[in-house]
Length: 307
Image 1 (tube, rainbow, N blue to C red):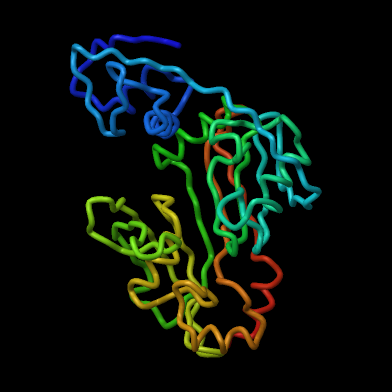
Image 2: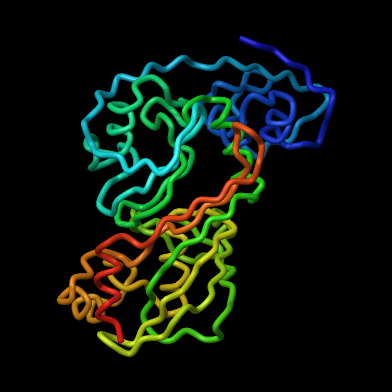
């Protein structure tokens, strides 16, 4: 247990903790505030709490052991060193355990492959996981092998200095050929599995940029695009394009049922969304690194049917 009397005031507690307890990220401290592992004057406070000169901050972090059993799930490892790995996640594989997916996730494959050589900053059920992709989105994913590397990469995500580019096929012919979608997102109160554009107080800002690669007329009018995101909100790309009536083809949650049915006949059985490029500073040598991953076979084959 650690007790601290901050000398600063009128600064958010999570920001102050990240600046002064530099081993962990702001997101890490926000989670600890919510669980009561960080208290102010002996009481839980909200993540946006601002410090006063009289405050006493108590930190008592719980030690949580990972009890999950690894599974022999094939991993497509594109690069790895002692600190991190770059994977090509296949569509259909959930990243970490959750409601309805207690087993057979990417995490179970990581535990089998790496054993205890994974970070635990994201909790006992998410070893190694710094960020995530939706179940039916394929492509590049960063895995942290230790907590120091995890913190390094997490801070780059928070600072929005990591370049994340996707390739998507959307319904319709979007214009102009370059554009930005700036719309806040929040979780639906009626269906917690869905996200929507919303101006509610709980919404979080989200920014998506796109650039047209090519227009097609069949099997339905559609556009192949490059997508770059400044923020990494849940379902961000899918919801943003659906909200402007250019949903991603094959997306069962946010897409068009008739268009999806026509595409399914030709082999598109999931959303046409692939994480194509990642760029960031390596936690190993502090140099800029860049990774690319071509479209998965199912998306490449479907694209051959687009004219």
